[in-house]
Length: 260
Image (tube, rainbow, N blue to C red; front, side, top):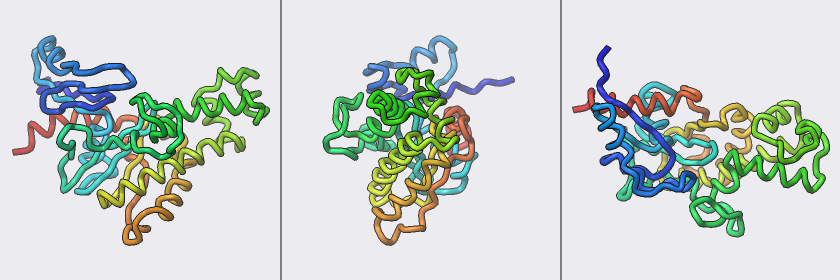
């Protein structure tokens, strides 16, 4: 078996030319030459990008974005980011920070974000943010049913328990996921007005509950996006599931091999 190279994807703002992690707030990392270290260790070429960009590439080549030249892929997990494909090419911007939808402000008086700002999408709609809100509301005595599922320990709430509760019809769990859809929809509507994509694909750790999030998200997008875009932009989940980022990382190597 011939190994042509190593494709890497990670959270943060990544210099995808030099393979340097410029800034990863959740990892407290800045200016880390990740690709160089791995290339020297394995004696192989290394291509690197952030996880949302990798997801976008994977979907563009092999998933629900196949053949779509103007595509937005949003990864929702412990962090939130997006990969932008414009005219068939990944768009990273002048400073490699294009697509940082997780740091679009959606609440002017919102909570502190890992980036140091307040009210970012990531601070209210990430997996960690949703679980934290659920814990806080249980401590306020808002939902005894959900509390029972945690063994009467609000701090024991995790995303799996929240997902199971939502699937059972728990009102607080469903409300929290509806809030995620609202925040995502608001940020997406603004982004769509700027980029005019053909399709938007949602992936990441949010996938197990995406069918409970998408209806509210689409509703907000329809209400807030530019009239000409209403009901024209496809908004659906990724086709590669949880493998989308890994496939996209491998795609970084494929691009070097097969593009002139």
